[in-house]
Image (cartoon, rainbow, N blue to C red; front, side, top):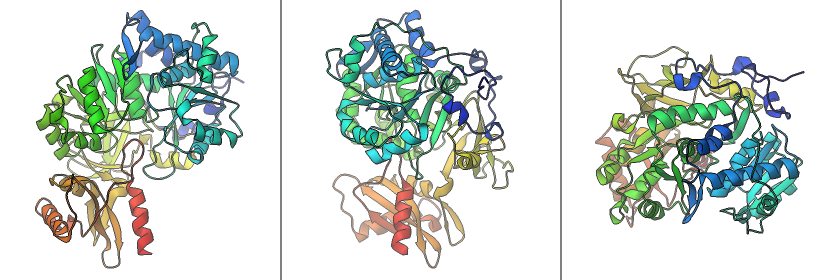
Length: 556
């Protein structure tokens, strides 16, 4: 029997685990490529590594700087050589066959990029994990994806070894250094020394799975989202082409790990697809981000709203005149942050809504069309609607559930219940409440689970957060529902103060009045708690559910 993927084309995978664990065809979202010229001509068989990396040589980028960490940089040709050697190691030494899953564990480094392409070249499936995960957290993706090979940064060996020792599926574990020197004694580099640097990429089907990306856990247990080779190309040829408009002259940096699909697209796939250069950060702290932009003349940055806010206090001390574009995702970009960053730098930030399930950004606008306080509109190739809880489309200005269709969509690995919740009647439901303007711009209201019902009023937590962030003493905040015997819930704000500001009852009252003066009084935070930091994922997303859990526990 020849296994076929959802597109009906025979899979090139010898190991058909991913194909076998796809959601049923009837629970897949509707995907339509026909109305977008850039997406309608993909062949039935394509390999992302061929399209992105090998073809870069044919385009004349071979001797151009491709990826760097600090002052250590590789050209496109050097990156190709290292990726080919890794593919040789995987197939010849580890016995990888197409369709096998390979776990990658490292911070953003040139060697992680080479390892990712090495896996894809060999027809494997990348399972890239957040670098700070502990052994017990690694066990879930390892077992869920039935990982057989792991490639790990040597500085993260301790937790990796524990995870591998408890795994029933991993047969090979190799370590690598940050910049992949062939003089390194790490096991992967030692194996690479014996290889030729020549490799014929596996001719995978366009609808073969290339990656399994595990969600970052803002709502609890991570889920495994599978994406085709075609999905990765489609995102690059929509967001990368029409929104971020990457060119060969761009030098791109950012904070999201490559395990986060926002980072994978913005910090690796987009730059390499269009011949740009990647400058990885050695530290995510705002002063280092700014010094990296200054030193390496960075032109584009990808990061979360919290980082843009953090940079505001320091930006005047650095020459970042080379920066012409910033892309924000992971959390909604507050209007106050957009305006403050523009005032301080002259850069019109791009806000984008994406999800791990959809691979990357699907709602946005290019900078010249950005409207502060709005996310944008559906990207070319996508369409968006707002539905009520009965599945009826609502009119302009009416909040409802955002639903999206396009060239990418949710495909959870062996998770039919979650698949049914995310894909309804062929539409992807990312879990966001939005409203649409009469001219098609989408305005974020809340996560579906961030709506606070208090005394019968529906209150958007992020709306209250946006007001609080306009106060000069507020650095960060998170607003949630706190159980209350009289009102059902009250609005509670957790606030991180800026600089050396002191918390006291007078400041609580001042902040409450500040909110009342800006939005309907019933939305003000009846409780405020000052904290040193807020719980976040490794990608910088607020984990409001953890604060909600604490509130429910304290009230019981």
